[in-house]
Length: 439
Image 1 (cartoon, one colour):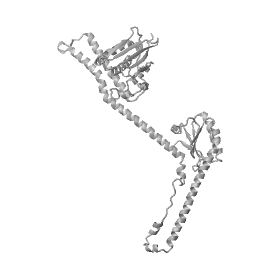
Image 2 (cartoon, rainbow, N blue to C red):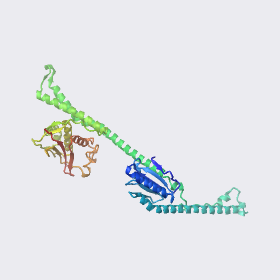
Image 3 (cartoon, helix red, strand yellow):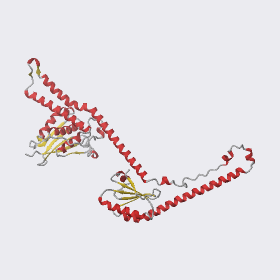
Image 4 (spheres, rainbow, N blue to C red):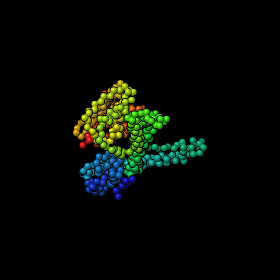
């Protein structure tokens, strides 16, 4: 507990005060003035004072909804009252007489309740005495009753006070402020533990999802690599002293394709593991001079089978004089593949996808990939780049929910920007910028 009590505090007094302070040098003098003023006012009305440092227990400031410190709270007698501001001493002087009256009224009610208890006890004793006198007198009825004590049971009278007239228990009504603060602290710790539990459950579910989908997402590049290697193997005839049936150009193309797919697998595994660990470390990039227009065309060719499977048309607008950029080729390939993959996923069969490049300024070029799918709700457009975030409509679809987050990290690592323009039922356009290579 980080709650301290004033040295002269009396835990039996009805007036209970909380003084919230902080460690700012500018507030020290104000706190000193407040404590000095309270020390002088103690002669007028005694009180219990607890001092709380909000820098060590910020949840208490939230619980009492404080907007500034130092602040003084009258906790008891009710109603609760909060004083804060630069003129805190003046406010205390203004309200002290009313607080004193509230204490007197509380004590008066407490005394009245005590007198009622005393009066009730007298009535009970008087009644009990009359009953005893009646028991001692001879009575035919009593002579007929066995001497078993039932006479007292038959004539016993109990006096029970209504709950509204009973005196309030001083210990319960004037609970220690420290006890109340401890309850608040424990409640805050329980809340924090629940949040941590939810976060851990979310991470476990995410990792389970990764394990279940990892094989699926790795199947495409593994299949492509396997086909390239099998083609190379079939091109050689062991009986002809390993003479190749393939042209040198085709052999080189197959080797390049296998190498590209292998790198894609390695990069995919690295990114997935990094996301699973929840690390926010900066991505390692190796920027160099890059013809991003040619890279876009290469990705379109790579995604050709998927485009054909849904009978999709892709419209290209890539200027021949598009300047080269300074970027990591493999990382930018990841971005284009991810955005184009999403466009294919959400574009209806027979739809159209647009991929365009624009030389915006002498410093930046812009790549845009647009589809005519269902679009993204306006309220979700700022969140789709968050890690693990997925729209409810996509919860039953393949994917990790890290694609757009990874794209954003890659583009930011290149000092670029990525964003989306979308309207419901009118498709989505994802844009990103890259720096122009300066000769």
